[in-house]
Length: 115
Ligand SMILES: [Zn+2]
Image (tube, rainbow, N blue to C red; front, side):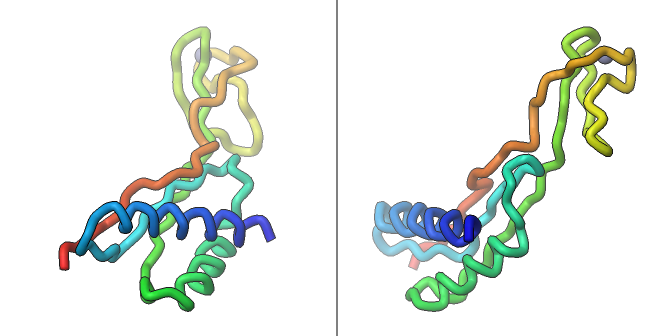
């Protein structure tokens, strides 16, 4: 399962970040996932919970922010969200437009608490 691998690397990144700060405890993790990243947020959430259960970090909430696909028109500069795979510019009709959002797969924040 694809999401399990991602959950694993997220958890590893969290652990290494916490390891750098003595006495800090992670209380919450935020992730940004784009529509085009090919990741199922629910499956990722579930995989993450399962992995965290066997660690001292449990319970560790994971907040997933879903980022819709966004395109920008090179002709008029208009940026828009894509609906129904229609990627031509809704303002001037130009096509093709360039993808500027929706491929995110990154941390949005890591909430730490000093102990
Ligand atoms: Zn346009």
